[in-house]
Image (tube, rainbow, N blue to C red; front, side, top):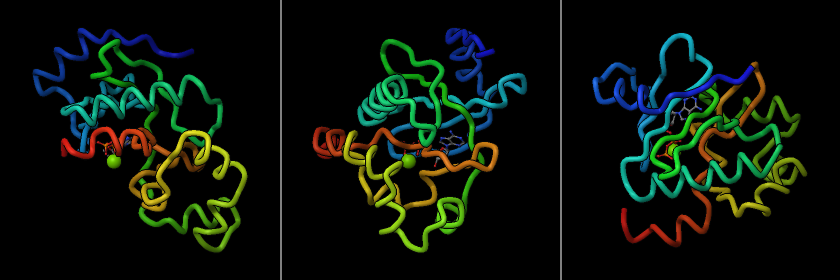
Amino acid sequence: MDAVFDIQTIQNKLYAHQYQKLGTGSGRRVYQLDPEYSEYVLKAAYNRKGYAQNQVEAYISETDDSPIFAKIFFCDPDYRYLIMERADRINNISVLFDYFQVSNLKELFTLPELNDIILKYNLLIADLRRPVNWGLIDSRPVIIDYGFTKMVKRKYYSFF
Ligand SMILES: Nc1ncnc2c1ncn2[C@@H]1O[C@H](COP(=O)(O)OP(=O)(O)O)[C@@H](O)[C@H]1O
Ligand SMILES: [Mg+2]
C-alpha cells in the first residue's frame, strides 16, 4: 500500500534538521525521510528552477506509466516539495549498458523505451548520459532527475 504523507509534519522535521541530506542539485535538496519511509526521498526546491523541475517531474510521473521514471507519490500544490521513490546510486553508465544489453550511449538512446520518452517529454540527452541522474530500484535502472527538460532550460536558464 502506498504511504500517506503529512507534509506539514515533514516540513517541521525538515526545518528542525531532522532529515539526513542525500544530495543537492542545481534546484533541489534531497533528503532521506524517517526509517518507516525509507523507500522514499523528499525533494525540496530551493530556487525557481527547482520548483519548475518539481512541477515537470510531478506531471511526467502522473502522465506516464513507463517504469523508467522513478515514481512520485506526493507533490504539494506549490511544487516546493515532492516525494519520490528512493533509488540506489549508480557510479558508472556501464550499469545501464549491461542492463539494456547495449554497448554504447547511441545504442542506449535508440532503444524504444528510451527514445520514446526522450521525444515525448523533450528530455535532455546531455543529462541522461550522466550516471548521477540514474538510480537502481531492485536492480532496475530508473531516471531520478527528469525535471530538466528543454522547456525548463529555456525558461529558467537566465536565473541560474
Ligand atoms: N530518487 C532518489 N533516490 C536517491 N537519491 C536521490 C533521488 N533523487 C535525487 N537524489 C540525490 O539527490 C541529488 C540531487 O537531486 P536532483 O533530482 O538531481 O536535483 P536537481 O534537479 O536540483 O539537480 C542527486 O544527484 C542524488 O544524489
Ligand atoms: Mg540533478
